Amino acid sequence: MMTRAILAHLLLLTTLSVLPATGLGLNTHECVIVLHGLGRTAFSMSRIEDALENNNYLVWNESYPSTSDNIEELSDAAVNEGLEFCSSNHAAAIHFVTHSLGGILVRQYLQDNSIAGLGRIVMLSPPNQGSEVADLLNEYSLYHLVLGPAAAQLGTDEDSLVRQLKPVKGEIGIITGDNSLDPWFSPVIPGEDDGKVSVESAKLDEMSDFITVHNGHTFIMRDQRVINQILYFLAHGRFNKDASPAADD
Image 1 (cartoon, rainbow, N blue to C red):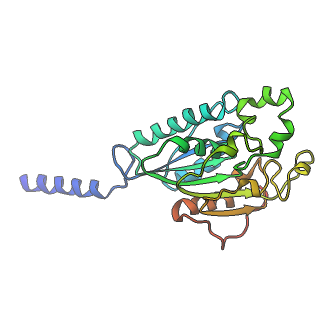
Image 2 (image 1 turned 90 degrees about the vertical axis):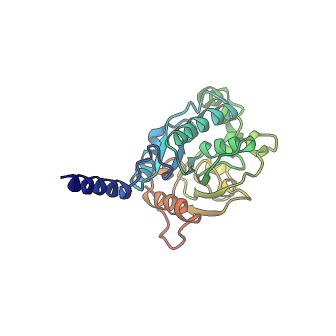
Image 3 (image 1 turned 120 degrees about the horizontal axis):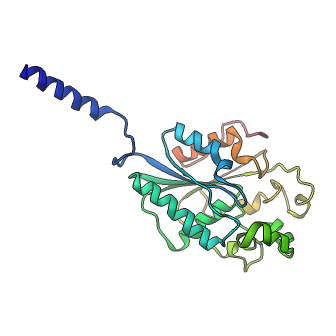
């Protein structure tokens, strides 16, 4: 009986040693902080969230008050909340996947903060050099009333907050759209654009990789082939240029 008990105990220990990590108290999982865009909610990033979780990432995807505060305040609150989630789950690495304003929040945070275990950053349609749409609407009080103080900081002039951000360290992959059906804003945006941000404005000098997709600003995050590229970049630090280009959702 004693021999059987010992053998059973050893078998249990062996089984536990090969079980996949759950992230609870184990420094094995990678965590992804997902940040939605201006005027949106976490639901807009739900398809990305599901794909990440299905690929065994821990995911923080929560709504933040994008129309209530300025970029500095939003960055501090949202990024820190995501970091606390990743830290509490003992994440081995921390990545970011962002849409539009979300990418600016990450850049703002990294101006004065470092992140232990920082992994890779994927930005979808970020207005990294400002947006001509913000320039156009900035003089209207309704624009500020509806979209709040962060929207006023996204202009293309040299004094705007977004243009004042310094390069950040990290592996950054940027995906932006070149398809717009917007009859109001596209005419004021130079070159190819996604209806809100020009292709050139999305770029950063320090980016590791860049691709354009045939999609618009509003729904780029819901395109399955865009999601596949996000997963590829998080795994490899580059985009899969052999994949077929993403089409409209």
